[in-house]
Image (cartoon, rainbow, N blue to C red; front, side, top):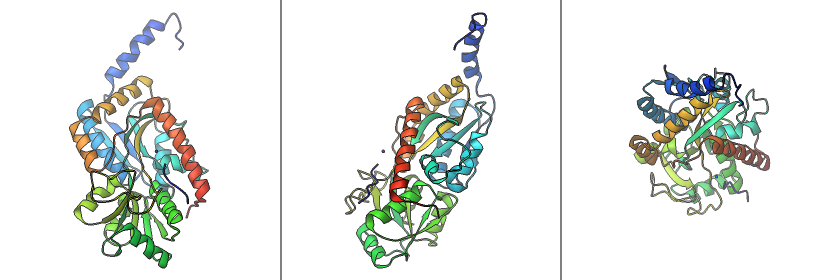
Length: 326
């Protein structure tokens, strides 16, 4: 059984001048609106976390933060665009665990998530959840879904935010550990996928709880299991996969903020501090709680090491599971 459990030198003559300008630059920043490039359409998990944190940062920084949604190719189109932006402190990239998976599935990427960006910090870490359309899927328990899928191979389909996303890998790993066959239907983001799931155009989704919690709470979707070691406070009546009889199926996603390579260190440090402050604001802590997300304290160099480990971990998962792009 395959387990997815995973988680200056300064010149003597000019030294004083350079030292004096660094704090002044950070203090002066920002002097105009900041853009957050979100590599998925509105309505998905990345967008669901980017917009509240942007709103909180606007209050703290006194400047507008513009959300620029650029979906496509499992989030790699937006990442590619962000990597080419001027490193002036006015563009940041809001990515996700998908971007640690992409190197294993997209060998011709024109950017490197580890070297073309400066890691700022992780902003949220919600678990994945198995959700179904209640009108199309009769199963009320995870075991019933597995039993039906085994008896009816390829009859059920599952939506994802695109090839190479955590939704995709979570679905493929579900198939492997349950020995079932479901048809993968990739979208340009979790938002469009969720719209079609709620509309009954697709049957199942292995979604991040950040974008599905509200749909489950409203009854638009039925959650069968949380792919985490413990139940979520957002949907406390939903068992973990292990409690539902599927041991070893644990998949969490995460969302984070990077700056383009060569963004001034003082601006990156300032943004990191503002993000840490924002994540403690009542508006954010309450919103994250409703979305079933934890707030991991992973910033700067530690975040960089985390990304490196995630690239290696997901690369092995892709290799071991023999996952291919559709």
